[in-house]
Image 1 (cartoon, rainbow, N blue to C red):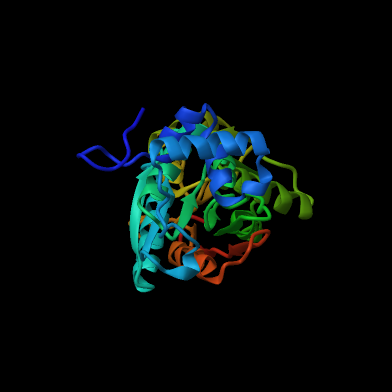
Image 2: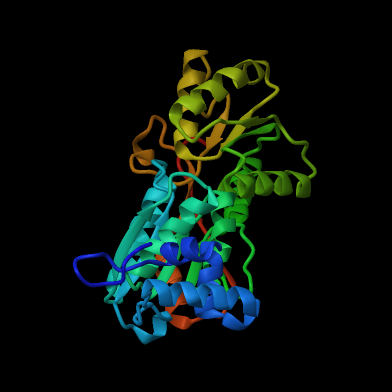
Length: 338
């Protein structure tokens, strides 16, 4: 048993209460926040454990509008990809503009207990609201449970909002449509897509936009290659696989799921004696640093990370109340590869 505060012992946490009562961490949260939703017998068991442990809830852990701590929690996947890194920075900068500090919790796997441990950390530190960066579907699902106990905004392009959860993101489908439309306007009709990992919302949205645009134009889909990751090495492997079809004329353009994949594909095509855009046109996604200085400069879709960061913090301030989605449009950047 955890001793109550005093004598140098640490204060008991919600996890301690859950263990004492032999219930889940979520049940303890519901007793604290929505007690009427918990069965009386279970509620009494949790309350008895609180009394025995001397548990005292952090009184400053309330909705963002109270602004009692000036601290916002940010749950991030800690992925090395360009998009998640830029999004994390954008949210932190937007919070600072509003006079809030951020506490960062890196979630490197999508298990519910990992996300729940981040929630416990934030509750113990009295955060006023939480922004969850969830490019991966499983993390978004775990975030829905957090929204029952705290003001939460989910940053995910493609996730569905709930009654207690607002969603902010970038319109990946629209960005993909613009990329493929640009290739069609350039006269290309055999357009392949090198897709990102299938568990990512962004990858799914870009596949959807590619398919929709080709269908609307009455053009058959070119090859769909599924990359294992978002790196240039993944792109090189996809390019080497696709090169024979480019050489035969079966493929005359590629929409790459991000700029690093596009970079790797361009390298593979060059190694096979194929020129961009002479033999195959190319459009990437992200507009990473240096994309304008590739040879040739890469046509790509620029994501408005800063705007999304500001929108996420604004949603916390606005107390949107859930069931609201805000998708911000990306911008096609025309350069030489298409």
